[in-house]
Image 1 (cartoon, rainbow, N blue to C red):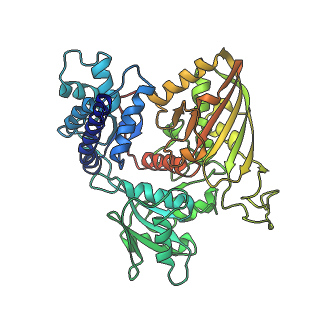
Image 2: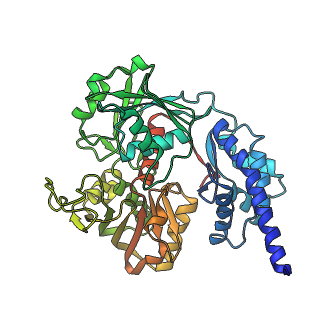
Image 3: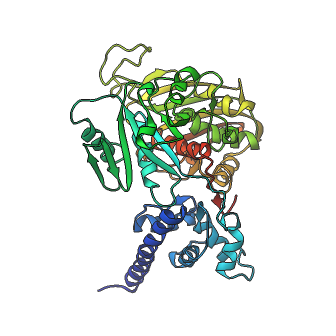
Length: 483
């Protein structure tokens, strides 16, 4: 016999699932047609399932005193469809919670309230930038994830258009193999959509994206204008060149306007960590670096801590998943220790990430040391930051501050925060943040602090790279409501 409590729970669940299913087409249409990415307390709902939407609403209770029901947020989502908005990331969770529980309504209707809160995105900018042609030079781990992220944005409102990938000449069947690697990934799972190939024209078709595959041994071999590609942003994922002379070869190719390196750069090339120093990118910059995955993971957290408490000095130890640079079994390698079997060993190695922080955050120059341990996992890494602070605090004080940074600051897309006591590395696969603060591991003893920051060194970094690409293309996507 069904109990009253059981019936009540089933009815409640059915209601949530129905609202979530009704939200799905609205969220998709807003994203495809208007460039509006809908989120709930930082959790993106684009390409989410109905269950993901329910879970995102449930997470609000982790941050606020009251829960947020889907029936409460749904009217805000509906209202967005009636507004003329320019591209933005709109957090309906924060908007609804503020309106319903924190006095945001103030006598306004939902429509009037949204017009006030979303004023920065109303009235589409007549000087909106033109679509930017993008070329991925190299198609390895980062190249394929960048392709997934760019394809995900394909639609009428998309401003970053993936037009081509460039790879070395391959054997017969190469195109099918490249498409297969994009379609299936042992770490990140199957591609969300449809992929077909046109072997006659060397094209990969994916979710509406028409991607020319160009075979070339060097940048000098490519004329992009022959494929209708102009003023392109070339994203170099090869790791072959890291200085102005090497990367400058791309600028000699017809159809190329700018170059972005997905690795630390040498010389005077700007190393950018989006969220920290992306305002350094100028319209006239031709070559820019997106720094390293580790530098992207630690710099936003270090900036946040330094802004509030000050950092006298510190040490950053990186516990990093193995990479293609290492050997599967023991073999010759030019670097010490990296020749030993990656799946079988923890390998002490060097990292320049701690010193590289100073390129994005000059106030920490000379204050940090760093080292790294490569471990037998294929993805998701951790940075352990042992810091001496200028101002004493407590564990709760530091955690509460970083939690607020993750929700209500200009670093909310870079810094995530978890209070889970059960989380492990595989739980962070697919994280779109530069780094995730593990609050349960935080240690504070007055002016000494130890922070543990997880990061998906592949996907989270790729999301940061896309943000730099948008900045280089003059594409501004604000977080609303504003921090």
